[in-house]
Length: 297
Image (cartoon, rainbow, N blue to C red; front, top):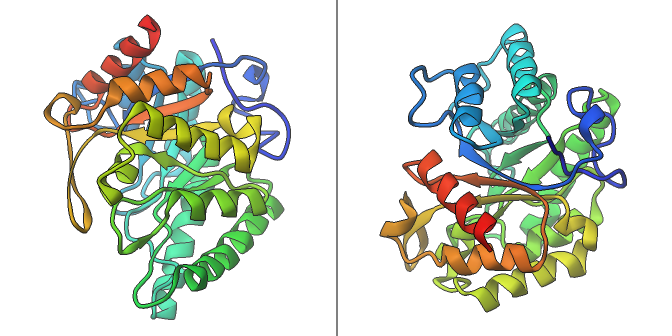
């Protein structure tokens, strides 16, 4: 049984997992309920994750936060009983740089609602795609996103909700969310840490897909966030199809050019801790593959 968040600038008091905080490891799991689960609900997903030998799961609020409080409590209890670490992915339609105020307000609400429900079942973080650039510069969008994230983090703290906000590295050149942008924001703001989607980073530039480049990424994490950053990773990975504008769709690892062996070797070399979420279409199959490669190094 294990967990990875050390005390410090991060979440400290989450009632679901605080009793387990002294254990450290790298966990592997799925983006949502495993494909092989007989039922598609989150509770069944948590149980199936453990049955197949994985130990974390990201709850996917794809089209809205529709889970109720009582269900969230049951999911949290199941997560404790099975020792499955949980996180949340906020609904996909989020744009904190929208030209329309009502869309920005709705985006903030989706993130906050994800954190509130996630907190009930012990989620360690809420992942979200922050914004689109539109015609604005990176610096302009950075300032806009930072202001919104700072306010949301303050509201969650005031509500006593111990869930990290995790803006995700994005896979399209039209989207705000480069590695540098998110590391800078995470270094500046309390209660914020990045979600590193290695497949997105590869798709965005057609590069960052070798052991050396993966090591450079982890070096940057340590430069900006210290050892604590490497000990509190939240990672997404899958095969990826991409073009000149970036990400097109997720693929099975073996059907893509993703150098997952080099990636896992870099994780091992830097002794990272945290959560690895597989987003491949075959979910648990590729998650177990990554776990196997990691354990054999």
